[in-house]
Amino acid sequence: MQEIARFLEISPVEVYGVATFYNQFRFVPLGKHHIRVCMGTACHLARGKLVLEALERELAIKVGETTKDANFSLERVACVGCCMLAPVMVTGDKIYSRMTPFKVEEALIPYKQEIQQEGSNKGQAS
Image (cartoon, rainbow, N blue to C red):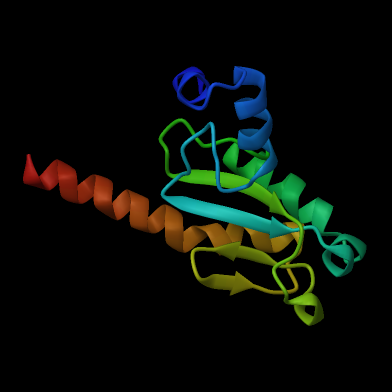
């Protein structure tokens, strides 16, 4: 950011202000499986916050963080446009509708299995 500030001849604080305002700029790399939880009005009213909290517990990270193994990252988003399916969780291009805290663990199973499979394949290749 300091390099950009020097190039543009503006203060680093101005660059930081822009970088923190737009979602496209990130200070932490995204995980292989980036999970977004909708917190728009419909999802909020349908207890989306409980889904978000369940994901934080299950992944042992907070919103905006990435797991140490870089397999998962968690983000809270304003709206994904699936209000009729609230609350909604999105991973890649898969939409999980009518989520509950109890469905979180089940929704993560395929991703965790994929990670385990990749790990065992790497072990076999060595």
